[in-house]
Image (cartoon, rainbow over all chains, first blue to last red; front, side, top):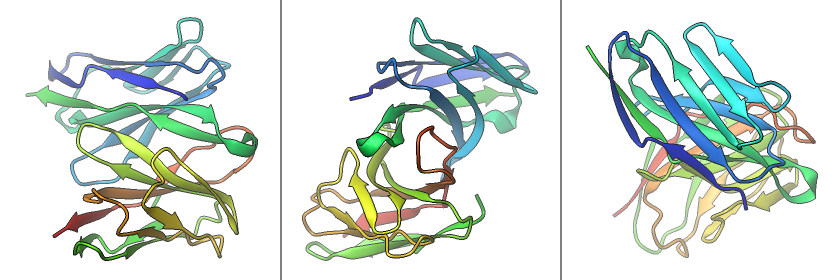
Length: 115
Length: 115
């Protein structure tokens, strides 16, 4: 089955610096890669996603890059702020039964922004 | 994602009891999903449903059961066969159930504790 590895598991950066989280996936057929942010005790919230027909997508301070050849994708957060502190999850789509698709999630990265 | 509700927010179960977690959505989404979240393990898929009266097992279905009698409802039963049910349970839904993964939106979660 699909395997998604996420690194690092914890990350601390000074406020204003950039943060990068990386994920690798095993299924070359995967074509959808979302990133979710989860604050303590809350539901995961989609922050950005990318499909396999593009290599990069940006939304203000957040960007995601995808390297299909190497089967890895990364989340980049610039000009970090205290409210960016949370756990971030990557995910990759995989084929389920009957041609439908489902997501496999990474194990998460706890990002702490140091004021 | 305000259109997905889960109840109760907290649930306590005694050994040997079955309990049912509720998930309702008013987004007219076709697909619904149940995930289990344990510390350091990300989100793992329990069951998912692409259409009414149909559902498929995810990666950790043993000890759980579901039904999908209505499009807006996807209850999860944690049976006594599930040996380690203490976890945070998240329900999600997405608009399109067919080919091509669509964005999943999460409910607020139910925290289940076995006494």
